[in-house]
Amino acid sequence: HRDFTHTQIAQVVGLSLHEAMAKLIPEASPEFWEKAVLGYKAHYQRLADGGALTAPLFPGVRETLMALQNAGVVMAVATGKSLRGLERTLHEHQLNGFFQALMTSDQAPSKPHPAMVENILQATGFSASQALMVGDTLYDLEMGRKAGVKIAAVTFGCHTPEQLATTYPDHWLERMDDLLPLFGLSTT
Image 1 (tube, helix red, strand yellow):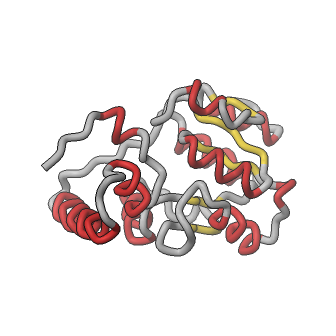
Image 2 (cartoon, one colour):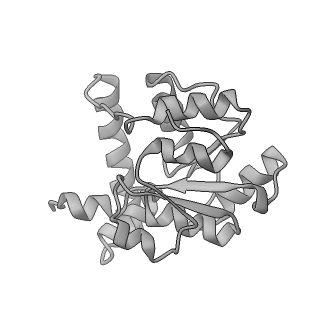
């Protein structure tokens, strides 16, 4: 049994569960990591099925997504969650229909590998020069950099602005609606 601090857990947010376990418990074996992942998934499923999990949206997310959608901006998700977990989250927050592509850790290598972004670009028909990766973790921004897209750092998420700065973001988002002017839209 091992306890982890909030800071330690925050450092693995965005990674697939396998990558997170390897980072949290580097001295363990791959077999141990696999057992830890299965245990985590079973525990998470029990909590989720019991309605004990809440994953609130950052302030301004819904309004920003609506404004972008109304302007015809094509949006996608690249996440360390499984497809099942992502679909649950989208349903819980009534965000179905906002995203034209969903890319998860069970469909592509874990962040910061660029495959999720590359797959989204292929699925949507956009080039890297036409895309923007918005993320609140170092792994999001590193993934975007490796895929050759511009990156926007969300400063109010899991990783500190100092950590995010190591990727030299093209844009900084202090609030979610700071994204709107990047698409020629006025803030709400």
